[in-house]
Amino acid sequence: MPEETPVYTQVSSSSPSIRKKKGVKMERVPQQPTPHSEEETVLSDSIPILPSDSMTILPTETTQSKEEKLRGDTVAHPQAPWTIIEDQMAYHPDKEPHQWNVSLAYSGLMKGRDNFMASASVGGSMLVDRKNMSASAPHQFSNWAEYVNYLKASFPDGSDEETRSLILIASQNISVNNGAIEARYEHQIPITLQLMLSRQISEKASIETGLSYTQLNSTITTGSSSANIQEHQKLRYVGIPIRFGWTWYDKARLRFYSSAGGMLEIPIHSTVDVRHFYNGTNTFQKEVSPHVPVQWSVSLGLGAQYNVTPYLGIYLEPSLQYFINNGSGLKTYRTEHPFEFTLPLGLRFHW
Image (cartoon, rainbow, N blue to C red):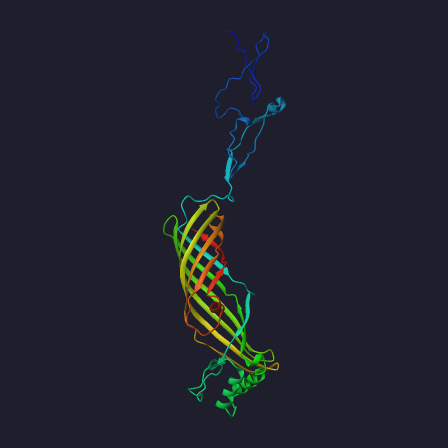
């Protein structure tokens, strides 16, 4: 039986196979592609190229025999399968919209103020619990001379500390501005915090409600710089808003929407700190708790949201609110500006 001639095959992606027979000249023949079994050598160039978008490919350790190193072959023997790990930081939007959202928003300026001078009046609001006040006497005065004459006629003894202080202030201001009563109003821009819960009722429409907390601070100074009455007013409200939303655009990380609704605000705290100053001296001081009715309002807004992750977004929602007159005699930022433009900024969580 004739002896079999060995065949040597070099494993390479670019070099053809070389056959060598005894006594026969070597010749190059094209490499015929053959399927590899699990025990055969796997070329590094034969590993498929996987998409690199949103994934990281970690190579495993490889080994080479001493014989392969001497030949200089590029041979890879994976000790373990290649591992594909998904990039956790990549953004993968869900196909289905989130059903629930919780948002926390802030609007207002901590030091923003609205200052102006305006004609004012004094009278009944300055005199509390006057049992001997004449029923026919007017409760409001727009001239200091009329006011001081009324005080002296109604309380001739001037035994009350508040009455004596008012007479001093009114008498000092008779010669200022022809005796006309003026006041300086300083209204702090309202500060509002909102915690809202919304629910998708369709692919585009949603409904939301929650709680809001608003503080209104004002300082009203009636009189001149040398003799005046200062009222520091603090009002606090808890509101129950209800709004309907409509999504106009929602692709990848961006979302644009609009909202409309109303809100009922209930006063939970109201104080007015009244102080009298005459020639730089505090002549009288008291604190009262005025009656404050509930506040109704309606709003319309347009919002833009950027989704940092599929579960967290940052949004800005410019809104226009209209506050319905509640009949209160208190002067606030809202009574001077029933139409209020706000810029709520907040975070929205999805699940």
